[in-house]
Length: 466
Image (cartoon, rainbow, N blue to C red; front, side, top):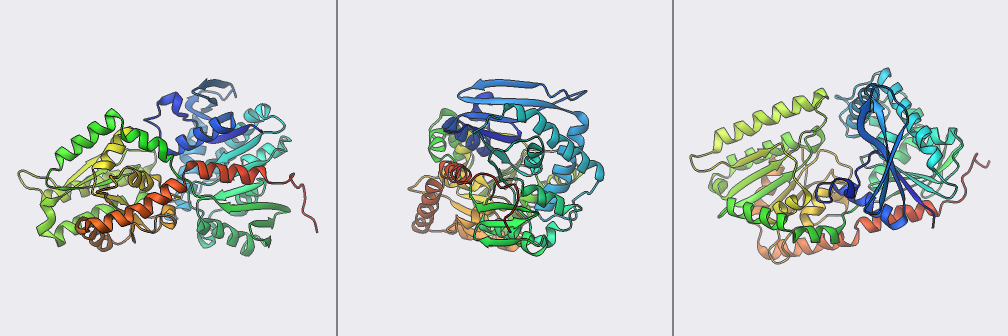
């Protein structure tokens, strides 16, 4: 069996930081590495005065990680700059927030080249290389320039935008051309795959000789959708842990005679948090008889604090949460709790299990694993209700959730009322359909589908046939 080399911006194997503390993506990648053996390569999260390319390699709990430090300028230009000020807002349809700076692009190219130069000596002849996410789109191009001929796959965890949005990016053709140095490119949903295909066909002058294969820029590329899932068995184990039980009991005690509505998101403008707050405010205003029956908990750990757009949204959310409690609270009751703190996965499992409603309303999201974790955490005999944005990738699978337009506070308010009032029989019926998908399309299915497709790619073409 070929080794699998996983490449991502950050390296967070569960054994390095504790399985209960890492996110769903890290769990998914670690599961893939344990199955196929190999290596996880990426940035250490640390900076040094001068880039040296020196590797730190460590194996813990069956996962070997190789990490490299970056310079401070790399962090500013590659990560905070091009990745998170240019590509992230663009791919989430926020062209108004996208910053186009040539220096950012130069840093992005430089770091991908440095990654390639550091990684290439570690790659053996039969290795499969699996590159992850928007930070590393040019990596295959840099590896090919160094003579790497292995099969290389790329998986995009965020949406690929419609071509009318993507073409607002200066140098969009060069970035798309870099995708054709991969042998296989995977997207979360068929919608995102089709958006990429439309760009190739209508903007790049490419062709589609057969379903799932594109030709452009003198290359041929396999594309497909590979929706990511959670490790349902592992999450079930977390639910029975002492910390999960304690958190579930704590939240149940805090919401006696009330229904808990919970949202868990990284603090980001793509997550629809402002609209969600306004939707909850609208629910309280429209349903005075239900106010004291509900407590909403929003957990939103702060991220990317050095990026101005994130500083601004934090200020707006602080003001909104204060306004909601100021307007609707009583001497013995607050309707809203807003927490900027990280919680372990087992603690979150307990919180999900205590909730009557899971509120997952991103304006745009690649998949959203919180929605699947919420479903997995429910009591089958008395489950909660998932309210889900139709613009999350998960909506393509979790169709028995209450699907809403996250831009509409009215729709959010109406869905909250419906979810809280929903009869038990309907909640159970919806949950069974949702849980069936969470179990069936889990992380193992995602991993095996992508790695299997990459393994099946024939020897790489150096040029197209006529």
